[in-house]
Length: 211
Image 1 (cartoon, helix red, strand yellow):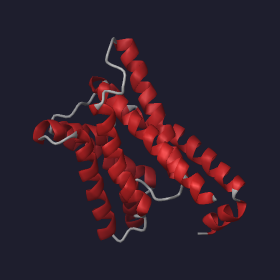
Image 2 (cartoon, rainbow, N blue to C red):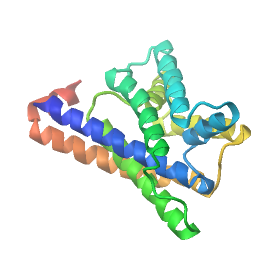
Image 3 (spheres, rainbow, N blue to C red):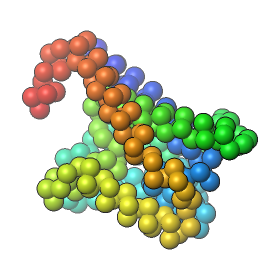
Image 4 (tube, one colour):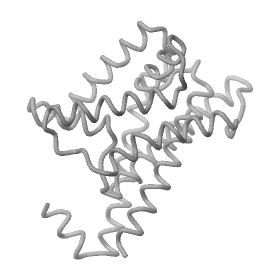
């Protein structure tokens, strides 16, 4: 059944994506994704856990999307918002990631994290069970304003980065190259696995495009 494949995409994608986030947090001094800059800044200022802040901010994005009457909140969106935070805390708490060693190896770790986040994000999105909370919010802003998705993403992530920076979050050179590496990998993975799903279930694929 198609739903079994979708669930497999979704669960494996979330695991890969969350592990990528955890890897990047391990070498955060090199710079991390703007949303994680904010999560870590709030964790260091207020407490709780990094994963908990991921869930809280995700919930705020879902509420914002609903208030703006966005169409991007589905069951998968809510599961995504909770599970990524839980999995990140799980990987960090049980120390299931390699330690910092030297600059070269840490850069390799961070690049691996960015690749994993691109693959994981593309894979769970290819399940078509709902966008991530942040993506859903940004897509809704794009719909409401008429701005391109890339423009909205840049504006939103710059604002989040500024807030995280003001709160003392870790910002360095790799913070500014994330999108250039992660986005093409996300797109390639998303398109490849969507095509695989449509090839295996052609009737569902045509109805998905029609919708």
